[in-house]
Image (cartoon, rainbow, N blue to C red; front, side, top):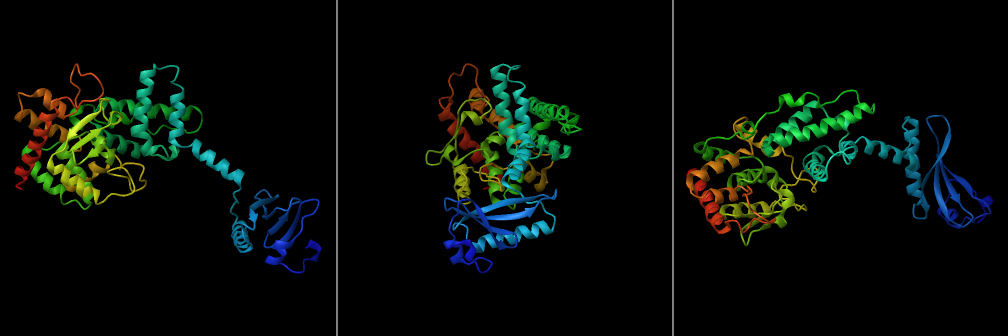
Length: 400
């Protein structure tokens, strides 16, 4: 069909399908800013003509015909027409890409990686790799996707206070705050921000390990366990009770995946990259822990994580989650997640005063002279007995 034979608009399906190509591209108006384009090679597509905010006319492709039907193209054209009437800027592929690039450039992950790039030639390889690992483990999951200019000082302070509770190591927190503060300084001197939200923040962080190891006394633990079991979220309650039973570093439990556990063999194998020591750590699981883990499996989502974030199955819960839960149970400034390690350490050393090395192995501490990257050979059979004693002792104290 020749385009001179077109009798009515909008163009009918018969017309669209039968329009013949010519020596040059041509466009036929369909209506409401929508045009139908026919190329010399016979390809057909939809175009929308609109006036940009600078007053110039432009074209926006809406897709190839017949993949994009007339009904779909007209619906999209009507939406775009409404946008132009409301003064909303139409986003083309180029402008969308530019907006995406601008958003990516403002992400905190981009900023801190830019800063890390300034250290490649200044730091030795070991120092640099440790910094990268620590940043990607603790900072990026929380703030990597955020616009760094929109993260408030209050958010940073709350995050680092919670991280102190999670890690219990002030020196590591000090390094992480330094990395983030220096990244903001880079943005400041590039003229992207006028102030640094981390400036002066370390004044308000705990300056030593004792402040990060808040814990109740052993005789108060049964009441705390009973309170934990009343928590509104059963998965979080299970997580807190596992912290009591297994006393791992909180980050190790938050980041644990189901593949790390063999419930039939009663083992939790912590990968080297998730342990503070950098050594694979095998944890014997007492019967009570296995019962809790099997219950937790009933809440399993598509995520491999035991405790996935509500926002993304690929990320674990925030390092603040367990601490907030304890606070809401009435234990603010009395008990934090890392403090369970101190309680267990005290109880184990009192019970097994003649087995200091085994107790250290239970806590996942490196014994001087240990070689290799796997600690399962370190008193594992004795640890099975000791971990079961602790779980049974907790049951006795609670009155089960």
